[in-house]
Length: 444
Image (cartoon, rainbow, N blue to C red; front, side, top):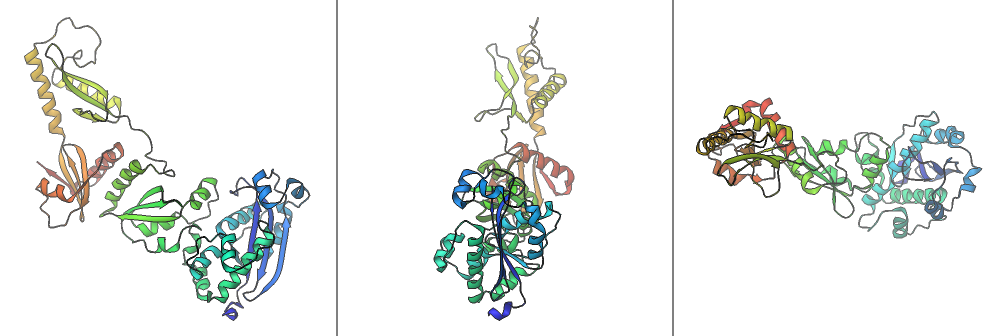
């Protein structure tokens, strides 16, 4: 099987750095082992001056000190040689996206654009040697009986990675390597800690997906028209920002929930973000202070309308995301139903004369009846998906077969799952109903 790789030229790379992010940190050491698919044919190893302090914990781990790199060449000095070693070879590393992102970034700063195929020995090892508890370089080498000389130094780790590649080749890894190198293969862009089948087995349908960390905690929730394509799109490109690299390293597994339609997936995403509060979701993660118009009877017998903050167990006549909208609505009721501004707490001027209680209370009831009439009950029907808005409030959603009699709300409710409402959901439903009136079914 080794002869199969005579035509393949590998460059096994390992680097030591001052930190985890190419834009902010420098390379302190780089090693490149040249391999022709059968044997090692050359080695290159050098310290590099990063022009920034090496953190103490990094210095202790690698043994590379500020004094050692102070007399080392700048990366720009060795960049032409490094580029020539890499440009016509397959870039191999253990967790290849880390090493590749650093080398590509610093080569680009030196004026060289690296565009080479990538091969990750973590992914190869998971396929060829399944069942190990961990696949970090140290753990993997212990499992495979490989001795690492000079651990946590670029030269020692690169030689160990070359031995891992050798063992993969000797254990019938040829076809797997060929598949990983095919242009259409997506494994190389996936986070190193994510098993490839988690993305491969995703269906190409609408839904909501969840990224989990190493403890199973949901760290990101997203929605998709096509689950498989959307998830893979997270990993394309070479964004080397701290935020993205940290995000990718945190992804260990993916789960998903299929939804009947893309619109329902959008609504469900909002529900799940509010429920799970994932660390990497930024939008929709803010406290929503809602406002309400409340009705109560005072000690004189007047029915009063007042604006106040909406609280968990309160039941306002109407709810609003913005205080100004609540004021606008209450003033509208005052004008159209001749309510008294003082009795609605809209005017602090002491009233010289108050209206007849019976007549005024009837006006309040008329106003409330009008408001209730504005709260429509309707369904948004799309394919086999249904969203129910009952008396102006989002009730729930779900899969409803096409032959279901949707004129009977009770029957529809039995098929739907009830979810909490939030301002994002209200806004999405309002916008969807305006854009797609043909999909809105009003129910008396």
